[in-house]
Structure formats: structure tokens, C-alpha cells
Image (cartoon, rainbow, N blue to C red):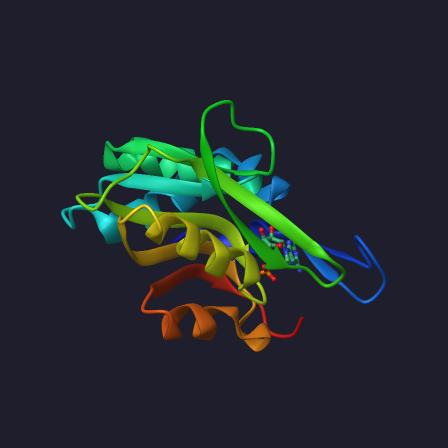
Length: 177
Ligand code: AMP
């Protein structure tokens, strides 16, 4: 029987604040087969498609993105929070529930010959992923694919990302918020 990845994700109610059901992937990555299988299921979809880089969003996107990059035999690009990268950067602002945040990549890391797969642990409203796609595309790179371990489809992020011309895949869905 195939491994039930959804059963390995722990749900913690009211974290980080009341009303949120936090989908905790630490229980999935702590499970050796669960972690390996998550990486392999994502990577298997993108083999032979000319992906040149995997980009992962800080911090949980690094865990899965790095594994997928190794499995595909391509390099990994960290998309970091503002002020963390040592070289020249380009940045993208995006709205949070309260205020604004900024993500950055190194300015010289990609060009128009590159085809990037974006990876993160979870897509909710899609704000983070859309900012990441916009940032990656400013380098000239082609970004047509994004993979997530978890989608919360009722929050509409995957649909918004698809409207930006990105093919979205997720291993697990949770209904509701
Ligand atoms: P969003 O920009 O709304 O799509 O939020 C995506 C980011 O927030 C991801 O990097 C997730 O790690 C985190 N996130 C949002 N909602 C949840 C949730 N219910 N459980 C766990 N992480 C979440």
C-alpha cells in the first residue's frame, strides 16, 4: 500500500494564533520513508522536463527544495528573507496580513536560459509563492512550475498561481483554513 503522507502531517490548532490550523510538517520529515517519499513524489513529476534549478522559499521550502534539487540533479537557489544574502540581491515586497515582507535572491544567479521549479512546504493564500515567481521571473528565467507538499485549496492560492501561468502541484490537500 502506498504510504499515507497526509497521516504524517500533524495539525496543531490555534498556532501561531487562534483560529489557525497549523499543518506541521516536522512529523513528516522526521519519518524516514515519509520524507524520502515526499521528495521522490515531487521529483518524479519533473524528470526529463529541462528543469535547470530548484528554488526554495525560506525556511521550510529549503528542506523539501534541497531534496528535490538533489533528486533531479540540478542546483538549488535559496529565496531568503531580506538582508540574509551576502552578494548583490534583487528583492520583491509582498503583503502580509499585517504589513509587508520582502524576499530576495542573488541578482546574478539566473538568466533567460534557465527553467526553474519553485518548491515550498505549503500554499495557502499564495501571496508568498506569487512574490517568489515574480522575483525569479525578473531575472529572465522561465518559471512555469511550482510544487508544494500541502495545498489549502479553499484559500485560493493555487488558483491565483495558475492564473499567473504556473502549473501547480501538491502532494496533499486539506479542506478549510
Ligand atoms: P501564503 O503566502 O498565504 O500562501 O502562505 C504560505 C506560507 O505560510 C508557507 O510558506 C507556509 O509555510 C506558511 N503557512 C500558511 N498557512 C499555514 C498553515 N495553516 N499551516 C502551516 N503553515 C502555513
